[in-house]
Length: 349
Image (cartoon, rainbow, N blue to C red; front, top):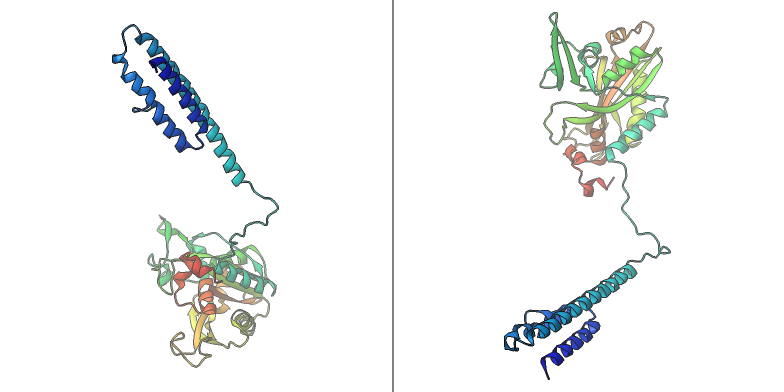
């Protein structure tokens, strides 16, 4: 067989092999067999020195033509295989709209949000209104108006995040991140006349090191009542109702004398330990009681600061931490668990 006939036969065999290639791997194998460095058509090009000078132009032309035809057929077959693969992927990925939807994880409110909403709903049912105030407060509303003396430890930079301090005419004017939601009570008393029945939930900030029972930012819930004829009996009845609604009808309450600058008399509300029923255990440190919140009758000076006549009106106030209520309700030993965003923990509530 002459060189010309050999080139024609290689082209014919190559075109047939390309048509039969059913995968990218088979197509690559055909390309290497005919057009690769060791391919049959390439071998003819390398043997051109053995061809007579008169025949070289013709043989070279035939080889180049065969090479171009094989490369064109190779590209066409590659497109056919890619189109077939795409059709296969589309067919496999077709969605059957008649199938039921795939289940997905549904979130829920954070346990602290649940506690706050439950307490809000409880007091709304008693006729209270939910009020809010600014996070950045003046020293007057956060401390002075609430009867907190200038030398009180809570006004120290160690216990308060001060934002800005200025001195004018020997007077110190401060802005700070509120350490309690009590300023909302004073703003409410100055903005409206009694009767006042409000609940003040919100974030508060204190420079505490996070540990098992402290956080530098937490949610406080305070309540205020100002009306004619309000007595300690009204305070006790309200908080007894709150304690049993939140912690259970079987829980007992007690009121221990305490001191707060803005209430007089003041006390702490304790509930009987759920773990031991009041007999004493590790959870309640052997006392049988657990502290829940602080409360008291609104100090007369606070009413005067708000422009309310203490001879005509009286009131009570209370404050609690939502995180602490959650810990006591669910028997949690470390308050930090509530803010660490561990879904294995939070999904329980």
